[in-house]
Image 1 (cartoon, rainbow over the protein chains, first blue to last red):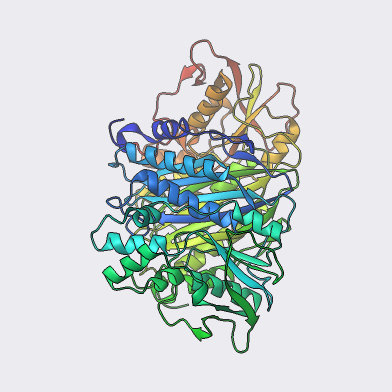
Image 2 (image 1 turned 30 degrees about the horizontal axis):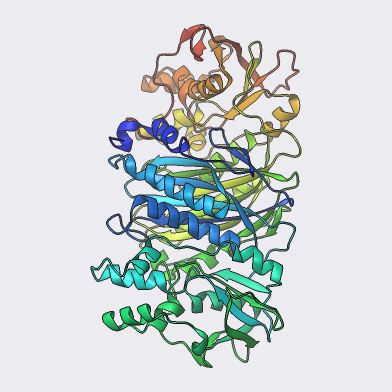
Amino acid sequence: MKGTVGELGEFGLIRELTARLTSSPAVRLGPGDDAAVVAAPDRRVVATTDALVEGRHFRRDWSTAYDVGRKAAAQNLADIAAMGAVPTAVLLALVVPADLPVTWPVELMDGIRDECQVAGAAVVGGDVVRGDTIMVSITALGDLRDREPITRSGARPGDVVAVTGWLGWSAAGLAVLSRGFRSPRAFVEAHRRPEPPYHAGPAAAELGATAMTDVSDGLVADLGHIAAASGVAIDLSSADIDIPAQMADIGQAVGVDPLHWVLTGGEDHAIVAAFPPDTKLPARWRVIGRVVKATTAPQVTVDGAPWDKAGGWDHFGAE
Amino acid sequence: MKGTVGELGEFGLIRELTARLTSSPAVRLGPGDDAAVVAAPDRRVVATTDALVEGRHFRRDWSTAYDVGRKAAAQNLADIAAMGAVPTAVLLALVVPADLPVTWPVELMDGIRDECQVAGAAVVGGDVVRGDTIMVSITALGDLRDREPITRSGARPGDVVAVTGWLGWSAAGLAVLSRGFRSPRAFVEAHRRPEPPYHAGPAAAELGATAMTDVSDGLVADLGHIAAASGVAIDLSSADIDIPAQMADIGQAVGVDPLHWVLTGGEDHAIVAAFPPDTKLPARWRVIGRVVKATTAPQVTVDGAPWDKAGGWDHFGAE
């Protein structure tokens, strides 16, 4: 496929992008009309939106368009799963410069489509407009399957805190890329293309999770949101937090305590939840801490002490 | 309110924005968690997304943040109405430069909120990220109230084509602004803040509309979408198209045939629909044409002849 998006034009590009899409059982009316229609079997729909901006959330020299697409879809689909819902559909608003090669949005769309398929969803609509900087804004929808949403506010003292998915891999991969390296591949890949444990969200709801979130700002920061919303404190046990040997090696090579990546790296979209203490958790969940009464303000501690390193990700904070 | 969004920070800005929101009966869980939950009473949800980019879709010296918010919400809510659905909720993804005064996104949010209230919807979630150019991406959701969606593909030869809402007012207002004027006020206001006839979408569905769309690319262009999707031709009667005297005056002043604004101006978000010929249309609908058999390709004609002026709006076309 040759040429720029400016040469192809808006309608040509939309045709090119929609031609690549697949459907899913929830799609009642797909792209091409004023709006799409998606099944909402339990009379409610879960909805979330997130935007990625070139230079801030991805770099074209570090990630392919396909990987950006998978990542952009993944971070929204993970938010749906973290409510205990099953993703059904995705909408895309895309800003692209006129001189961008057509292959870029086309491969982006392939990535979004493929990540949607992993999660059981489909792209049902979108908008493409011209601008100076690439911006990928995705809205994901989901179905709660007649369960109540698992919010951040239900954690109770005595609950165990457990996590499933990857923690710190994306942050370690970013540290490697930032220093000009392209390996170890597993970490670089984890940065380029997270693999959120979508199935675990609805499964946690079924297991009786009292509070849940996906780890997008960093484990300590996101558990901080649960602590604040629930009015509790959370204490993590560093002995229960697994640091893979290879991550320890990278940490040593670049001079970073790998626990920092695990506690503050967000983009893996692991899912962390609080469960009643007697919950029989499947092996894929690792208990890493406990909900306790907030003695002063709601907070997250590690081994009983505040975690004093940079805590998570503020989009307007220092780079 | 003082300072820039960079000084306030991401979480501070989100707090500031969500504090201004109102709810609506459809909101089951509003902003502040991983995702929102919105009622979808008829087991389906209608969903659409559109993005506005500064410099391309709005200018800060021509429109206030409040007006940009109303317009951004309006164009999405109009898409929901044009399916025959009632808007329920809106999500916002916002890209803002760090040096932007906090008042700008705050007033934008006021505009989005107020336009949502006009349409009966509420803002339920969003994302705020930093970037060099302001970008406002909105997703709107709606409920079909147990009716089938009115798509673009159901128009049949013999149907009448009728429109409700404003046509050409925004385009005339833009022409005025582009020439450095700020009046006539009614047209400039129409450009800054369209007033889509939201109620008319569900009402048209109830009246038996066979095809419907909102006029966002221009009347001829959008009817072209209906003609193509339905495999028909549409002939408009220029005698039935109302040109307000004041619009004729502006046309003369700036040297533009006002029929051009009416036929190609898109941003008023009027609603145009095809109805069976025996439909008793309320007075707010003006019959402007007729669906006929496509003799060659599906097309839109005016008084039997092709409309040869620039036909609508291609976001990657010439400025």
